[in-house]
Image (cartoon, rainbow, N blue to C red; front, side, top):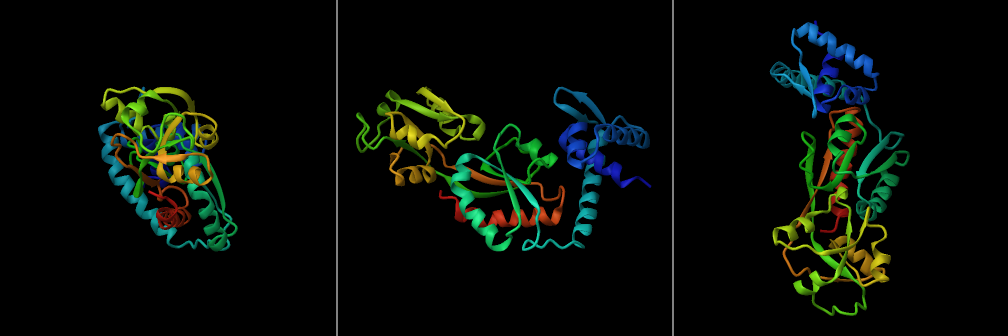
Length: 299
């Protein structure tokens, strides 16, 4: 009979495309994961994975085995999980959630209030979103969930559309050149602040490129936190989701104007692998985010 631990290692290698990634997910050493792979190769009489620039690429046999192994492993883990009880009111479980700092601004206050009421001992660690690493983080268990703009690089995670973000322009209340309406000429003649693309907010730049336009970037920042003060103390423009712009405007950091060109609403998704790790705890966390998310994001 095939050792179930070998199946777990095989599945982890297949999904992370990495022996070290599989070891990290399963909390075992890399030599242990390599030894398990060697045993599987002997059992199946197949190489199973070949090293490439993209990582461990599965052979046709591995692809066939994965479909069977994954279904069986998920069924076993769910059956075991059903015997456990997760009690949020007493649990001290630590969850890790990936958010942009915009997500922190909009979501954390209400999320912490919710936890205080239903799970007072739960710990929450917020990890800054890096769109290029989300797939790896979710697969290896580095994070339990992510709430961010649509990310096509996230391959097999459970996902749910939570909200839409509408983009607007935020500018100084007393901007010297722009009054109550923003024209395309106005927009292109001004200098802009942009947030780094790793946050996932690059749709405006992509849209301008479609029009063959390139705006003048005066400043690129890694996050949204400083935008309010920057706009209040300069004549720079920033294009950002309306939910964040309203917060800055209420604080007196600027005023909102509609964009002079069409930008599709940005989709906000919740991502997670609830079948990896502690299934009962992660499923509870995912459902809490599903319920709370739409009320915490202003489209």
